Length: 163
Image (cartoon, rainbow, N blue to C red; front, side, top):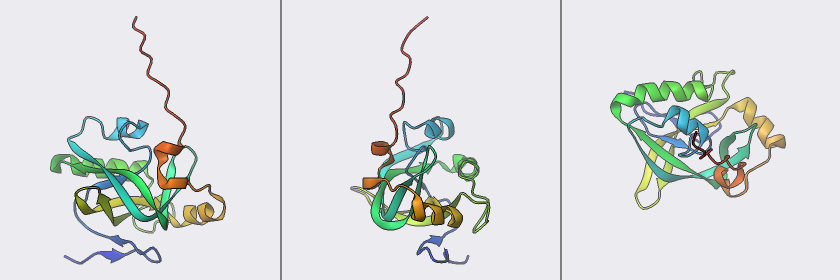
């Protein structure tokens, strides 16, 4: 089996195999896409950090890029029987059609992420694709501190009324 493949100009590598997912925006526990794509699956979730990154505000969701900061998120490890379906669903959600595809909104790359108290883990991370990256670096608002949950508008409280 060939080794990891470098992603041109990014310092990241692609890897094959069932890696966990580092999520930093709407897929984090408690967020709306977590509810739609992850809740109810057999997964393990842990707080995690992506060092050497930056987080930018997008149209209702964030974009991670290479950078000089830390991105806060969660590591999601799917059970083997859930992995293929979750990978395909997340690729669709993130508009990832394959490496370097010009239609990509995100690129899926393998990165080392820190799980506090447990060490470093190799994980899939969806980073802004090339065209998006150029726009973000030119005019996108960077999220100070690298934590989407501290930046995004609060979710409305659930309606607790009963009929």
